[in-house]
Amino acid sequence: EAQVTQNPRYLITVTGKKLTVTCSQNMNHEYMSWYRQDPGLGLRQIYYSMNVEVTDKGDVPEGYKVSRKEKRNFPLILESPSPNQTSLYFCASSFELAGGYEQYFGPGTRLTVT
Amino acid sequence: AQKVTQAQTEISVVEKEDVTLDCVYETRDTTYYLFWYKQPPSGELVFLIRRNSFDEQNEISGRYSWNFQKSTSSFNFTITASQVVDSAVYFCALKRSGTGGFKTIFGAGTRLFVKA
Image (cartoon, rainbow over all chains, first blue to last red; front, top):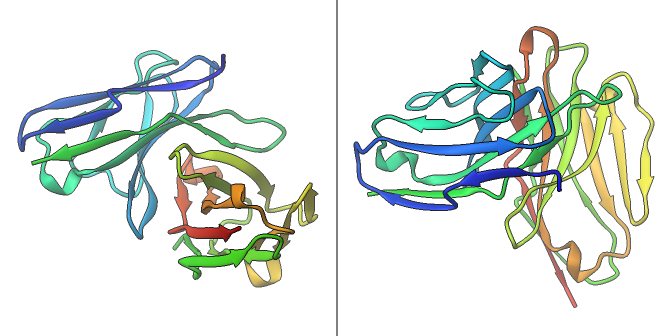
């Protein structure tokens, strides 16, 4: 089954404790992105990757890191989480098909930083 | 600046009513892509439609239709004869092209309640 998986789905952590949210897709997509969803703000792009070893900032990259060492994986790293990073996080993958770039989303990771 | 505005925060309708969700975008790019996504109460995000900036054809898919007008920078979404299962948050999104890489901007979303 074609899918984007994220782990963990739920995470409660404390300020400053490094964490990684994994994202994996099995569709051989070139493009991958991380978003955070906050009430009233919609989804905001954190980072995206256009292929292996090619990453770039989205609109809200501060406090986050990413890497793309393999095509299927795109982990999101919070080296020193803070309470303002409490949010719902989505990973997505995409490819170019007939001039379109629709995204396929993972199930989301709800992160709480206390 | 790139921006997507969904001015309707919440809409409530009764089943079988028609409803239009508005989306207005701003971009300086000559080539760009527009999308609608649905987020039902279960939380997943589901792709509904995309439109390229060079293709202004409107589209109908069952009870769903989309009206893309470059002249007014709008990409509105209409649900005809709404059903309870249409209750969800709907997001409009704009993807840049060229030097914009894969930057994608989402609107704040419109929450649609369809009452039986």
